[in-house]
Amino acid sequence: MSRHPTVKWAQRSDKLSITIELPDAKDVKLKLEPEGKFFFSATSGVDNVPYELDMDLYDKVDVNESKASVGLRNICYLIKKAESKSWSRLLKQEGKPPVFLKVDWDKWVDEDEGQDSKSGAGMDFGDFDFSKLNMGGGGDFDGDEDEAEKDEGNDEGTMEEDDMVEVSGKKNIEEAAPASGEH
Image 1 (cartoon, rainbow, N blue to C red):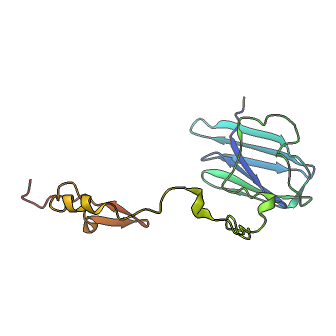
Image 2 (cartoon, helix red, strand yellow; image 1 turned 180 degrees about the vertical axis):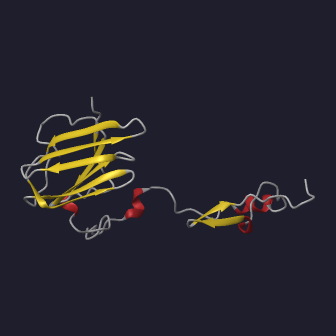
Image 3 (cartoon, one colour; image 1 turned 30 degrees about the horizontal axis):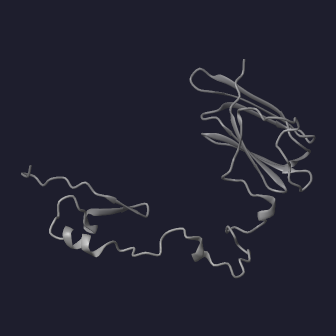
């Protein structure tokens, strides 16, 4: 009996993105039909466990403009919709979707967001005063000066900026190895 791999999906008005998460997939077979029939099969793992998907997509697709890419960790399929319109769900069947089917929120773009890449771009907030939201902040961000004076003579447990190393744009504490002869 075949298993179902985890499938993530997202849509734009004109296309679908289907990502099948199956590391080290072998003997990959993909079939897409114009009326929206999507079939996938492959084996994975040292035991060559069979995986299979047979789904009826919500609407018709353009097979000639759709593309697949088989990678080491997943199989990506970019499917062109026959009509440029948002689908209410991925599958034709109504009701709760199968447990292996998940929304890919990293790729999802809502229809009303359009082409704006920034959140809130083009929104008019008029005379709205954000300072009245009382969301904290607005105080002294340098900390209490009295506390800083108390700690001045105490070097134990404090780290200087020189003791940090930049890693991927963030500062991490560098563990200092004792010099030879020190214990």
